[in-house]
Length: 150
Image 1 (cartoon, rainbow, N blue to C red):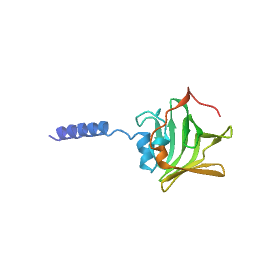
Image 2: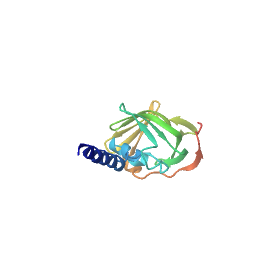
Image 3: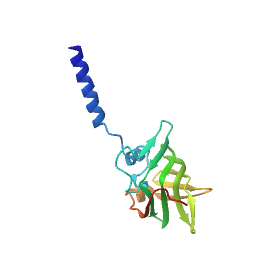
Image 4: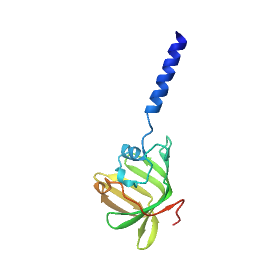
């Protein structure tokens, strides 16, 4: 009888583990207060495309680099590997995300949620945009496989 109970509990645990899928990168982003549209549509819809540790350090892998335009006509480039730290309403220590300003690619260092706005920090400069502009995931253009160079 005891072995039967152990077998049933083991089976129930295995079923629960299979059905409890890891959250997607989009869901993780939203759980920290960010709109899903910060990530392009090319992110895999599984928990296997990112690593997030207990300190908030993360690493996200895309199939290749990705370019798109955000409101304000700024071209943004995501490398195939994006890393940084995530906290409630704050992404910082970012690498792998850059913006083209005056024909020069600059690393986006941090993104914060301030009320209904997102503030992007590029070196000593910052610019804010309505968060609703990032409700939809952007489509990539100029996509390349592998690691992109700046």
